[in-house]
Image (cartoon, rainbow, N blue to C red; front, side, top):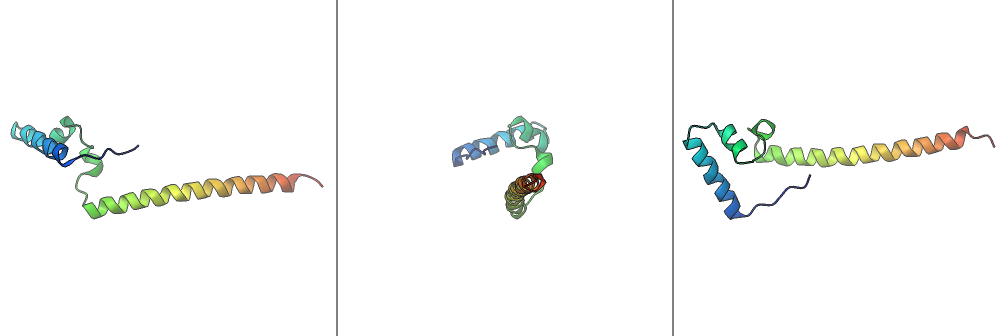
Length: 86
């Protein structure tokens, strides 16, 4: 899923919206949900360094999955060739 890049004005508007919702008695999690932000349960309490590391690990995981798929295909092809009688 591609992430949308927000401009400074949009970020400030969302922060003001959350601030207003919190002043109305909502919790931060409720305000964030009402403002259509990421679920607080998923990313709540993470530091920016944690988010960066999470993104790096997700990229590495994707590369490793592709590598495993390629190697599995190679193995299947080799087994197929070896199973044929010459």
